Image (cartoon, rainbow, N blue to C red):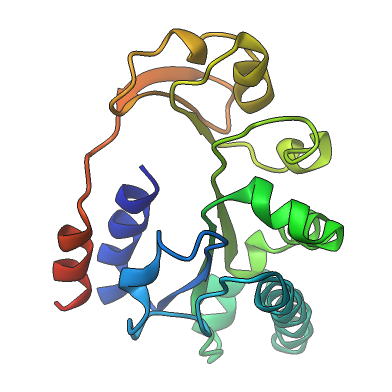
Length: 204
């Protein structure tokens, strides 16, 4: 599901500048992206690199807003119309639980980005196999309006991800619930993306 989302975004990179900041605590999910020209920095695979990358992104956000103020722009799109050359940045975290457990400050950095970074052109794509209130806090959840739930083990986990039960009854193999920013939910199905599919798209 994460790979499908990233590849769908990658198709827009030919139309507008797009970079991916990837955090992969398990060191295997994003390995195929390692030499991609679309990366924002190196793939972060340990606690130090992950913390450093998030801190760089927070600094990037603040610098962008300072530049926007000079240009009289409200967001990245209007700033680019006035000559600013920054790219949109997708921050993808493969395992949120591991990232938060590595260092508690990482959660604060993610919350700050979730609260403030959208207009700066920095967007979060967060995934976890272990949804619980410790790794997906209420403050972070409230700033992630669009959510996807695949099958979970318990109704309590469904409520953490979706604020409602139901994901525990999904069939697996890509069966999912998508909740949009308006609060409405729909049943959908994720694509099955293989590593070679990602590699082929990255070589285009």
